[in-house]
Length: 303
Image 1: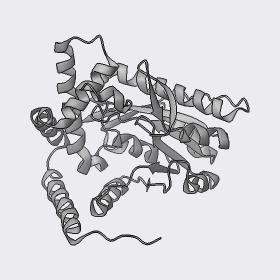
Image 2: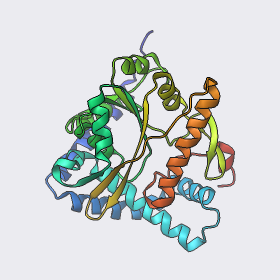
Image 3: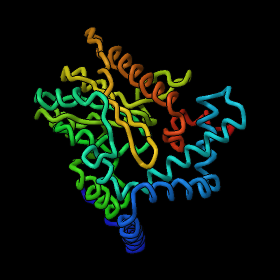
Image 4: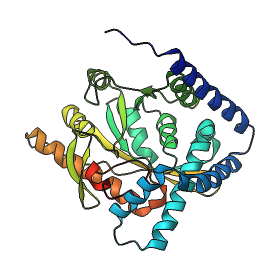
């Protein structure tokens, strides 16, 4: 297949974006993490409401919490911008947000360590909670041989920065080609490596399942792969603590049922994943990634 090269203007734009990130990273790395985090929260609280993403977040909150009164909804919108700003500004500093630095406490660590000792692949799932990057560092710290799936950035130079930032704290990224059910993923699991997924975003053509009382489409590959390989489906979550500290919880595994009817079993697995994600959001609603269009397009027609 012929790879289409970008135009000179597009390539220069990409290089400029990468340069801005390099300058930003160089500017924030010398400062205390808690200061940088607080600055990001303050800035996004000011700028976020001026963007189109503010309308998306407001509509998402209305869909998830239809009974929330206007003052409470406005407060939640403000809080989620604070969390998003902190997360963005913390990105160049993620190697400082690990259990080894004392900024991350881990509950249920023994579950990941058991996976590491077993030598068998597991399917690790979570969502975009608090600073979700922190969870990947915990996986690496617990010794799990794992590929962290992600969508490669359109800007290849920025993508190189993402890979380099995460490599500093032992995380190997994996952008499967051809969708989440690709041959790359199958080969990874066959080799005994685990795979982690963020399983909380809209996936066109995915499995229809309930989420906050509405039907959404969710990637079925994590459940499908867990069933195919008889692998543990291990959910994780993270919450934000004061002064740029975090608590990662390794929850009880999601128990999938293999009845022999694969499609039915995958649907049941996706429903359990959605229920897990929803429960975590209800516990800490300000710490979810509200600026993504999670529900079907028609639900945004009136926003």
